[in-house]
Amino acid sequence: MRCYDTGRRYYSRNFVLFFLPRGESPLEWRLGLAVTRKTGSAVIRNRVKRVLREFFRLHQELLPSMADLAVVPKRHMDPRRLTLSSLEAELLPLLGALAAPSAGLDKGCAT
Image (cartoon, rainbow, N blue to C red; front, side):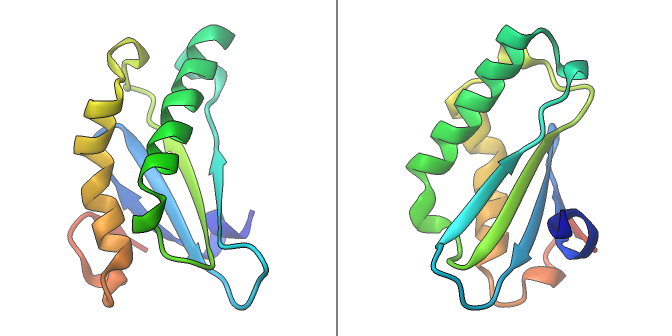
């Protein structure tokens, strides 16, 4: 995926968010979730993906249009403690960094 190779990386405590702006496209934004078996059983992985999708659905107005996003949980994340409110506290600052005009210069971002 080009998002991993050429996109910007934003780090939070439990997640890595890859962001790649796109040119003209009929799609607004696209989301990719990479939740591996290291996260837990299929039930736990599906719950993590459901919570992530719900977060992005609720906050889609904050996402830049014409962009690809990929979210990868870190190994040390405890999926049993993942809630929508904890996800909001962790990822909302990253969404603010994506919307900033100087998105590559914000704290918590590495290219």
